[in-house]
Image (cartoon, rainbow, N blue to C red; front, side, top):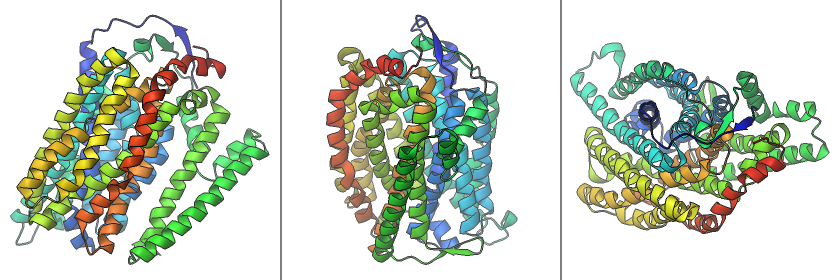
Length: 543
């Protein structure tokens, strides 16, 4: 990996027009990413009816199938973003996931819809690491909380638009062709996927021609261009892919201890996943799924994916330790960074479990149509999703300037401590209007967590490994959060006769663990940030 080899004073803290343009493009990228990822939620009832599948299977599509390929490709693509032209990488990725989103329109069964979702997962793997890396190289440290707030707001807008666009497009199409003779025989939900896919292509063109900033300039640590970024990315992919990683261990002569750790971890993960699969099958039995003519138990598929993800994490840690000891020392030598990743994963589990089934909850409990749900809930989620980060971003920067890293943790603690207390109150509302009013207070608090956690994380690492750090964060939060959250809500709902509210409430049980982690983070964050350069030097990283 390319090393930063030149230290220079950072440039002026003035934000250039190019920085604002890049923030706009990256925000649009994040918005479309969440739109295409989350549109499945509002189309849930129509897809279930057409494809004859249940909530657990929808959880697989919404979370697990997407998550596996998202996380598997996020690591090598994150490495590629640390060495190649990030604007070109994002452009190609946007076009690929937009095509994959449109492919879902032609799904006549579970298999092609699953292929579409895995394509979206592969394409979106570049959005977070490359996007955040670009922003950090355009904005000075003192203004990154604001920049991350804008991106967080764009994510919320994407979530809201997925409900609005999906619901309205599906309703309009089904109303227009209620008597039959729809073009290509499309249903409303299939047309909605086409509508969601189209905006990505002009954005991909705009990103292709955007200017690439000088890596590390804003931090006063200039990084030379990577001479072989694609080879390095391929090596990362091979080093984390289960079984293929054994070649790395053999080629690097890793020693008996590393072999024992890897094989022992694999056997432990396989055993654990087998036990969890048995328990879930007993708790919520599901009919087999058919993929390419082969029948699968959905619980086996679910926990096999999670097991592969956990094994990839083990392989990643080993490969970094062997291939890039400096990155290993900087990333895994920071307890503050590890706490951010784990807390983020647990909070993502809650968020995706809640957001993945809230549209279904509104339609089942209050009798709303998909169009009404999409418009009402989508507009509300988008508006509040902008408001929360807009409040948190400036507060995060002010807290950092006055109190250091502890100030950012305090904002994070406020958001993730108070919001869980409101969840049961929100989902026990007697009417849709009461739900929306309660949801405002809940969501404003909840959406304040993203700006501070991103700002904390990226201050814990060197500029040349920010994209790798982002990909690791997205890997863990996706495989544990998105991979488990919607599925857990789905099987709990199926096992309780479709009681979506109870299932959503159950997922909130991980909140106390998050609170404990944030208390520890408060006392670690500044210490670990100050030790960054010493950890890098100790691992022979020239800074």
